[in-house]
Length: 494
Image (cartoon, one colour):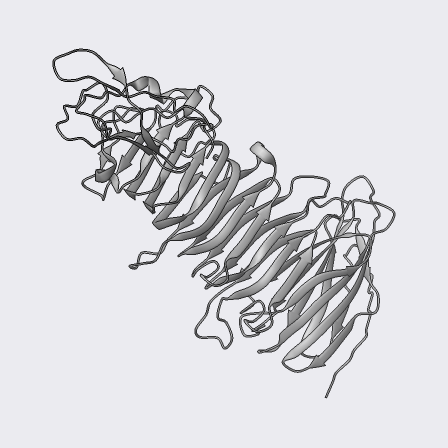
């Protein structure tokens, strides 16, 4: 059986705010009026459809501004007043009066601890010329794995989805997408906070349009964000404040060129194999602001390319491991007072990738707790890549790694057989334009001192730190030189 109710009550009491209400015995819609004493709002024809356990709610809401000098918000609350009342959707026709700054706020929540909303699939703006801000408080789950949810408004203010094993349906999971859209009124496109007790399986995006910054605030999951088969996408124009979960499968991006910021990314999983970040991080900067301490803190493997187009100013970057083929790229250098630590380093870290004059004056350590080694002296450290895990940290333009080249930089090599390979090892991947190689290898017969340039078979790829040169001529000596590490043959890209 379907239940349908369309009720609009408006009671005006002297010196009191207005109260409007629709109530069918399972779901109630109320308003405590606006954000200022003179603000008033009005419901139109509220429609609650469905049956006990699953409902849809249509809300026409209009702000009647009595004070046009300040923005006025009209607050509407949709409550479950009995246990087990899931809501398929809440759709809002949000309208303003004569003031373009007016907006509507809608919150979905149980009435008290004894009442529950196991699942909510949608809150969205269906029509109207006012901005809409939405929240869901103490809802057991958003969407389902088979029918994902959808939340769309100018501001997605607060999504609190707790996990409670003692309450039926309160899994704490989110299977939903969130979109903060442009409005052209007072609210900027933003997602302020999403906090779920278990897993977040969805996407978050903020509009490219709007009167102010486009941002994603705090995203917190008691379980994982994304999965290996369904990675999440979090994309904002200006800022992503923080992303925290046990393990993360996600692509994080700010699109505001070098000025976009991702403040903090943290994995908390402590079990074996947990605590990894898989996907990508692309932003301009990572630094602290009031309320958010910057940090890239990954307990497990960083299975991602992390690109900071401008700078990474977090004082603490701690990563369990950077696997081979993965890269951290920082446009500027690594400043004094900052520490970057890896349990193992098989991938590549690029500093000063903008090829400016930024220094490497901070600390970088590699190794398990209790046996870490500091890369020293920076930037031409002596540590061999094999002791780090096979990777390297390089300050652009990359220089030769003196001790890892063969023969060592500045040394000669006595050769008795007819074939010898010379190895040039660098602190980062190198390449050169078509044409002559940017180095020479000379040979001389022992005791003569008559050095001549060898003809070589040269092997290199754009993504390797090493170059090999092989000759099959008579016995000879060969030498390398630090001059090979010049900008002309070690540019910051690739």
